[in-house]
Image (cartoon, rainbow, N blue to C red):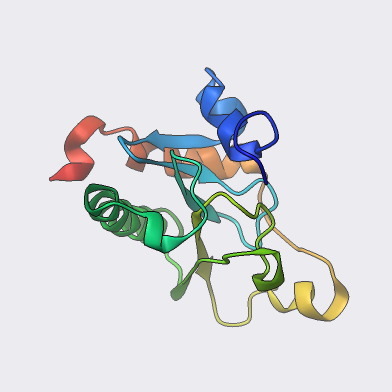
Length: 151
């Protein structure tokens, strides 16, 4: 996918109203956003600010911030949702399942024993028990602590 107007993630970064697009945090190199088509309540993504496609393109300082945001997102999901586990994944390329191919992003999905995530594979249906607005309200306080997330 081309950089700029053709890329959803490039367009989302230009949005001034964070809640409208589910933007939880804007970092120096990455942003954290709700997935608009979640597999579970609380499904977030950490998205590169730069329009890059591959992990090999991530600079050292970007990689450091990514790890910080992965840790912060895990903590936020554990505190807000109390999941039994969390899936963390990167799909690079359409063949690997990337819904937005061409712009690197990492998924974090809270999981529970017996949750409805199997429905996607079996019935091509997603069952999510809360609205995106509720997910935003639950998670936003954990990401709105200024630079405290860097400590």
